Length: 119
Image (cartoon, rainbow, N blue to C red; front, side):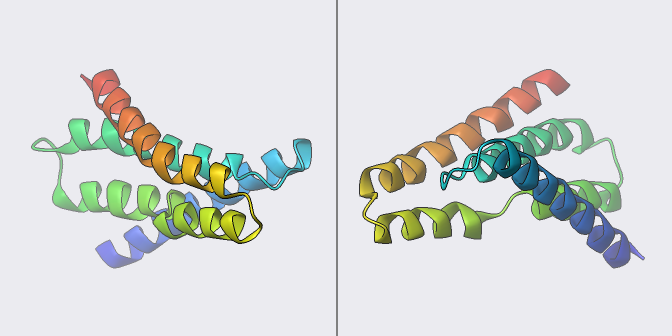
């Protein structure tokens, strides 16, 4: 049953990510991955909040559903690395390098903010 719930939560996270991508590209049709960065940062913030709230006080299944399922579906390391490679191949290596260095820092910062909000 836990696997089914993790899968469902992951699907919901993926849908949230898709809607963010759709809305950003609809209103700002550029090749820059703003929605990918935003989804990863927001997912990291939710993970930070959930990790602080759920560790030690919640069931292991709930933690797996929220962190592994929803946050795992919403954030994606593969997109965070694939897009800079695509940009680099399109001769935009400075922006590619900026994404590779700032995205992990932004996500880590939002994780800490999420934990702080939960505290």
